[in-house]
Image (tube, rainbow, N blue to C red; front, side):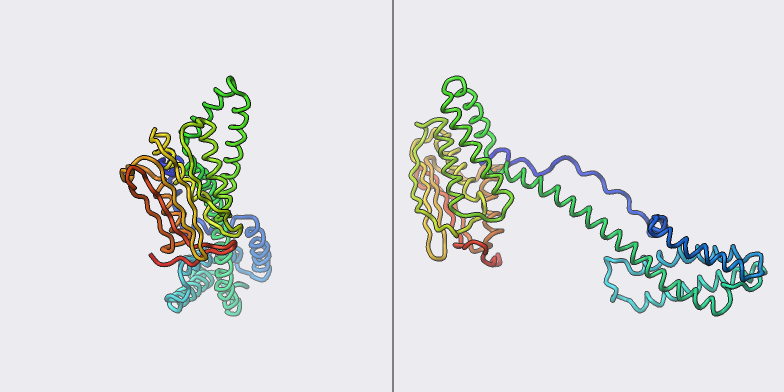
Length: 369
């Protein structure tokens, strides 16, 4: 299996997460966004003009601006602190509602009555009892509305960023999957051989290029889907054998015991390819003489695959990832319903797997374990 598959799936160091912004600062920043700042100004400015027109007190305009400013700073920030989106509202909701209502009442009465009283200012349009009652209601409802709008926007922004990050990770995973299913040494050796054939035998070079291109095209299709027909998997395995045979026709022979599979049987893409690569790498390419056996048997409920190669199995290689990838892919697709073994068989190595026969469009429920 591919040596490059041993590379860790890390694509450079991750950038440190930016420092978390405080609730008050993020609220102010959100309120300054034009789509909120303009409607807020359309309310605050007329309200201040009315306060000035219907009040004889010299401090009328500062009181109006102070009341509006305290609402904008405290109302949405307090609701966001008490009711964050990532916390269930039902948990301690009564206590938090009481705190929110109490702080809102204290802010409205403190700014509308307490501060003017300390400054010796008289009553104004916005500090009469009916106006204070309206301001208190606006504080409660407006603070909730602005807070929900800000939080939902931030939640949507984070969700989009997470989706973009997952999309990037998917691209990396596809590239890693390609590395995991094609031995780069085999690919490089094949390309080097093609370069030599271009000078010595153009027809062979052309055939090898077409074979390799067809194989890579099929593999790129496979890493974008979760299942594909068993017959396509067999075609890919045959293409790998054919490509090795082009490089050295005398290197090996293949005993192929593969009946025509039912066209509706599906398997995880490229689940057999690592086994064939492993058989070639530790069999003929390691100068072990003998045939490579590729056999598939299907029943009404199961598919049995056996791949054996010359050369005795010496146990798992340290750092090898090909066979563990096969086991993980079988577990993801079939759970405990699939079985995989690799063992020594005299002077040969035999790998076998059994998995449920799955018709197109369905996968069996995975068993526990």
